[in-house]
Image (cartoon, rainbow, N blue to C red; front, side, top):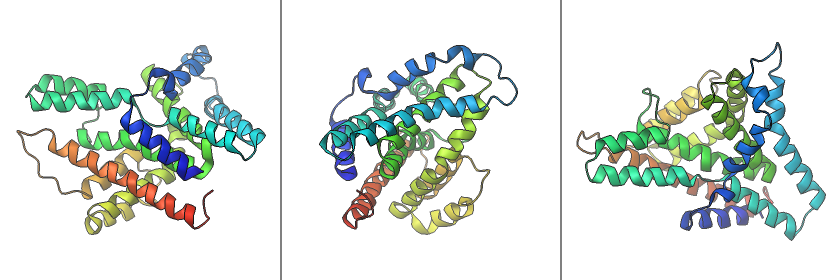
Length: 274
């Protein structure tokens, strides 16, 4: 059922544009607004548990719903619908398309605007590496969490992602707590994703990079993914072409999602996944 849900949702998400009602962020914003007063006020001593509670409640409720429904067709349908909500981001996909169109007509100012829209504010990584990070957050990580823990896993990661982005936006004092939670949530999935990069990319060059950060507790998930993805592809920069690097790395990220699906297929056929 897990494999069927993933195949169905990824196929639908690829050929359609989801409305706001089919995006997890729409509901996460409403959910977070319930705690806006608490999250915008200075945290009291040892109050970081509040963030953990806010992040976990939706997943706990989802898990309770799945357990109460038992095993059956209705559970499969609801799990698939939840996955549809959690995966992908139409706004970012549209911004990327607009970026490519602006680059093709030589409008560098518009390209810079779309880069900002897609959250590329870190000079330590390239725009293409930022796209790899976005693909991981909205696709690969959701796929891995859903395969491992079902609908509750997808909801948990989507909630962590959405709430953390909200706290960063409002410059909340709870950002440090949410960053810790997200670091924990990304620890295994980001290393699995990076492993996929070197298996579908330049293996011999990327393997030492991946092994070097495999058990490093201090490396940020975004930095790890950027370094492994860069080592996994041969990219020759051209000053006159600002699309080669992002397009190449986006193709790498897409191949990796297909690789993850192939692994899940093998695990399903071998009986490791339901």
